[in-house]
Length: 223
Image (cartoon, rainbow, N blue to C red; front, side):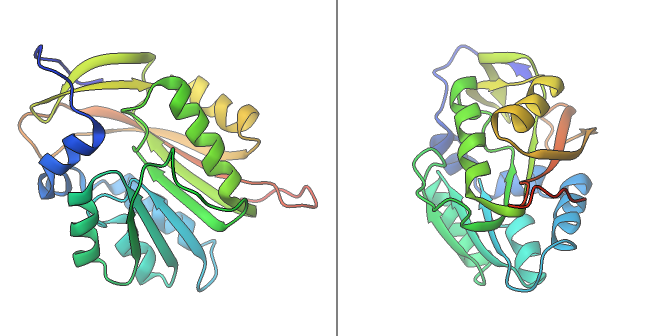
């Protein structure tokens, strides 16, 4: 997935992103495929659509782009540093410091949920459960748009931007299967791209973007 770990104690997600702060936005805040995914979503949402941004980071580009499109945006992140930055940079959204595994939302409470790379520092079992929770928060006919780094790994220690972390992920096939079979979503499309972060310590990595829809009550599809 990335460089091998350096033998130091892996950081938690909160510790990692508290430490990275704006360095993360500088390295990963300009993914063309991510911006395109948000545009794809906003083209399908009405004004005032309720959108949850899981792993909202500094608020840019995702929450900022959603707010500019007229969405009512809630962002959640485990990092207090990231939440502070997001509140300053995107005052038009609401941000909370909370883990997606602990976040309390009603079933169908959002017209769409975005989750760009927030599950990589969980175990596979935790990531699968988080995907099911997020799918449950999507209203019938709404969308779940996600991205991850596809890899058949569970609890592997690596180095990320010079810091030791432990990561897990899924192959493309398993991730799509999870969305379809375990989450009960219609996967409209998925695509893999390669991104080179703007950081000399990072290496090019594959990104998997998935566009899924929760079937409406009548069982209809969508695009």
